[in-house]
Length: 299
Image (cartoon, rainbow, N blue to C red; front, side):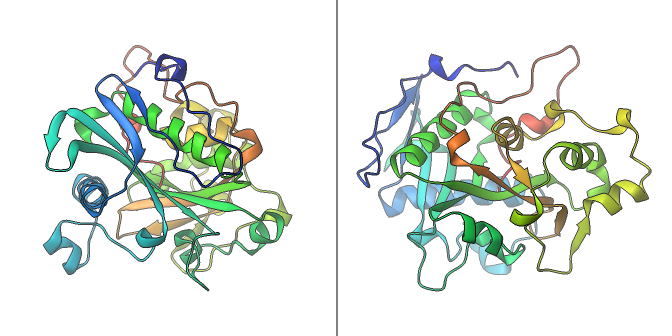
């Protein structure tokens, strides 16, 4: 997939700094990116999440989710949900939702409620350093629209939100497909070499189903320079974070529910404002990597 310059999309809205006013929608071709405002729009996003996170990725939903075909959890009610609508396909509530991203702010969580990511990682070091934190998650794009435009619109609207709300840190779960961490030694080798968080901001795992990235690399004898992956090997959302100076945990979690392996990743929002390109893999001969898919990068 070729790189898409975000300047080719509709201009980024210019929200008032620090305002909680709605972030204006943006357009790219037949697509409109905005925040969900009705239960019907949110349900469309949750149905897309179920399709991408469970059906497309061979996940293992609980019986209730499997029966409903909807991915719902305790963070949805207190989060803001970006949706991208394809206005060529109308539904009762407007264009069909073909992309979504959930933004959960520590300013809007219920009392004593933790981030989704804190089920797997201790974020106390980050909470001590930063006051306003948002978690980006449930990032999903319909298989029929993984052409770069939808991803770019989501990225651009999220940027406008982060700047308007004066967010200091964004974080989430950076996911790699499959529950076998050894399939991603090149990617994890790159993270070890370039992106591990400093000790004072470390995010240690709090669950047993985890693997040390260093131990994984050592056990697979993947320590030589030519065995370390490159930035272009990363899922697109992870690659985007890394280009903005992201740092990640030194352990990965094996997640059989979503059939993924994920690390915790964070970006200081001061690095976010100058993002100008959609961070997709460069198109090269024979490059048909599925890592351009929108279901990789954030749970």
